[in-house]
Image 1 (spheres, rainbow, N blue to C red):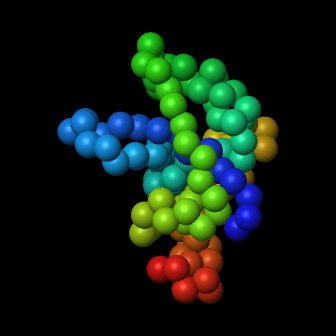
Image 2: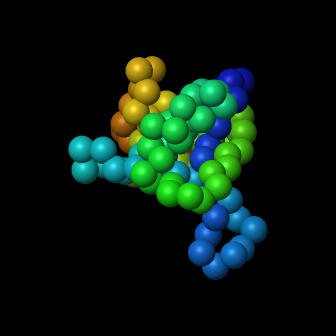
Length: 104
């Protein structure tokens, strides 16, 4: 939980100040996309330039507990998406962790 993570910033279309984070669907299941460092996030943005077009891509750093706050119910966690170090945490395990930490 002490580790920090990078989330790719997505601005809401209603121009609110709320920060949204990149999500993805993999094998029919939704995931929050997070990175274990800024260099990993930058590498992903370069690899997936097709997703972002000419838009400026921003990110923000969160601690482990805050990361869990961003994972919506029924979502898993996809760390370092599309990179060699990619790790998928299914929604069931995320739910178990939230239950164990009493963070649900």
